[in-house]
Image (cartoon, rainbow, N blue to C red):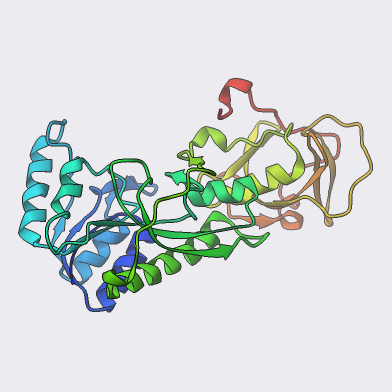
Length: 331
């Protein structure tokens, strides 16, 4: 089958790799323009672009797709490239640009199978930009991948195939991302092996939630929350933006934390107060319960388990982590 593929990050590259390996003809790859990254802020190609270049696939990087928008010239060139590709279908995975109606229409002709999207949740749960992060943050017991036919709405299209996976209590966004990326790649190859075998079904009207984009302002730990909720946020924000905690004038990254299963006796301490800091661990009072910090990082240093971290940072019982200002917290 001849395909147009639209995607940008590593999650999308997994699908492109598997579609290519399955023998589909990738007639055109659309991906985001190169972005500054790293300490030197040099322009860096997306994971999808890197794969396309390695395999000599036709590539386009429009800055926008609206024919009446700021990048109308880019959009017009992309429209021509899509038309020239004469594709049977388009596969869209974490592309980063909203597809205007003209893109959807370009795959709606006789013999075409439309625009198929790989979405990292069991729709209609977690429509939107950050379904993996939000599933972990919310404490969902499982999540999954949905292959759907795209329409003009935000992740509202009819579903072709779904599969669930359990969320492990130790999963971070990074680890869950990798499992879902592999699953999504397998499922889309399965669908495109014989599109006639799948019946599109509308999404349920009940249970719709939205996974809003992760903002850096969410990184600061609010110690007034309960311990399990903070622990989930730490895992959800790994690797981006990374949970932060400020104490003694220094902002630390917290990469691992958990709420001990055995309940601690009430300390009477204010949220954010360090209750214990020794080789056995770092324990902090929260709004409800105690949080044990397992892995921390100072600016410019590497991640360290708590016992090693304490050898280079004087963290003592009675000290208190700063509470973020109310206006700095995400809604």
